Image 1 (spheres, rainbow, N blue to C red):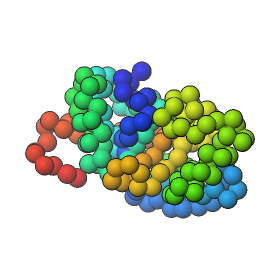
Image 2 (image 1 turned 135 degrees about the vertical axis):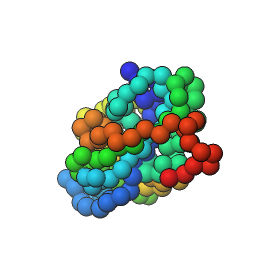
Image 3 (image 1 turned 30 degrees about the horizontal axis):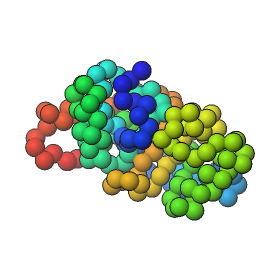
Image 4 (image 1 turned 60 degrees about the vertical axis):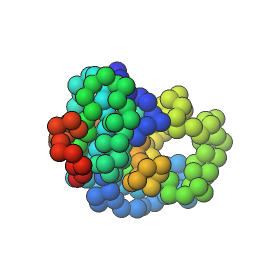
Length: 175
C-alpha cells in the first residue's frame, strides 16, 4: 500500500479544466453528475516513502496545485519527500456531484435507504462500498480552496505527467 494514500480524510487534487455538468443514471434520478473531461490536469500531494506513479484508490484529489502542496506538507509524517504528482485524465470520468448541503443529504439518504450505508467519507469501509456503486464523487469548493474529488479507481482514469518536489522549487512557488 502507498503509505498515506488511504488516509481518506485528506485531499489531493483534480483540475477543473473542462468540467461539464450533466444528468446521470446512477445514485438517483434527480441527483446531479459532473464529468471531468479527457485532458484535464489533476494533482495529488503526498509525502509517502513509496515511489509510485498512480496512488491506490480510493483517493482524494483537488483542482488546485497549491491545495495539493498544502496536503503534502500536512502529510509530512509519511517519511518521504513532499511532492505533488500531476496527472492528465485519459478518458471522461462521470462522478456524483455534491454542490450543496442538500445534495449531500440526498446522497446520504439514498445510500442509507438503498444500500444500508451511513454517509461518512472518512470511513474506509463506507468509501469502499460507495466505490462498488459509483466511480467517485466531486465536492465543489469543499474544505480548502478548490474542489475535492474522490476517485475510486484512479489507475483507470489517470496518467502521470509530472512530479514537483516541494523542496526543490523556489520559495513561494505557485502554479
